[in-house]
Length: 269
Image (cartoon, rainbow, N blue to C red):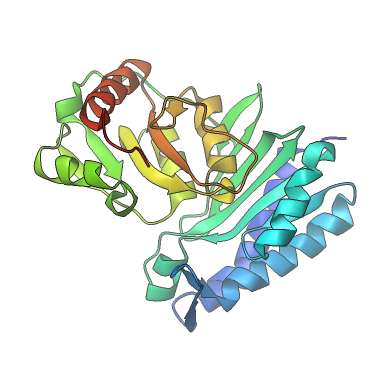
């Protein structure tokens, strides 16, 4: 039986209140082998949600970002029966520095596809949810992208430069958009795009737990996303994926065309 998205969202919100907010801006950071930041809050959220989900939905295993790669791969290999995919603290660097932009991202994968997604921002008390083929919501209100009556050159973009290789230099010196931001929480960036808070999006490398819930939320809200190579975003693997996205379909095509022309002949991330 597929869980109800509101029940899952309630578990995520309670965990954020109990484990994230009491630790915000008052916790010591550590560094993983790849240089990314991790804190005790990451582990605490993962432990708490793993226990609560196992108690409530024992038929599903959980893959969390803070597991070792071997265990993650084992879980992916047997994921057809159903698998939770969790980023316990998306935006850990923001969290540790006291920047109020972070959240919890949780998706349920069935037959290697996301069918339910929850992304919760405890600072703003904004809970983004989606169910495959049923729509997306923000705090219970229907979430739909709207047409944007702007050319690309007048748009606000969210771009993560550090994972884009040579393309980053072109974007920095000859941008096709009006203004650029990088917010530091991938899951919330997907959701804010779905909510129309910016117009186009580009990221060079996202892991499965980064995009599983957010990509579903954007898709169910009516947005568009592909990799830089023109492939569907979702793939049940540990290998990072690039992201090109927009809420408005016309704008997505203009954005994708510009990027394809600039990155042709170069190695794409």
